[in-house]
Image (cartoon, rainbow, N blue to C red; front, top):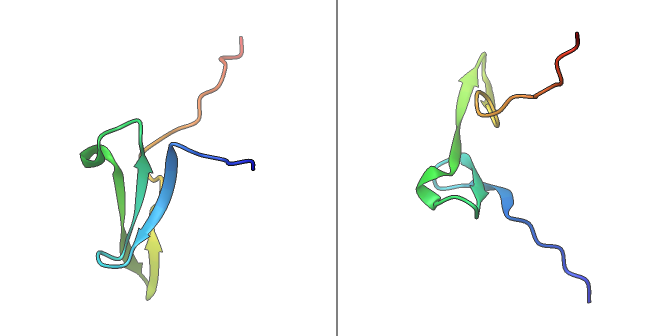
Length: 60
């Protein structure tokens, strides 16, 4: 049997209407939580917003 495991996962929490980015490399209190926001009548979740960026090699 082949099994795939991951240290990271995104989980929806119905009780708080939010998504939680769980990463077993960090303590639970440091996991990112993305709450719902209603904009112009549409519910959105800013998953990843302001929490990461791309890195690139500088071009000379």
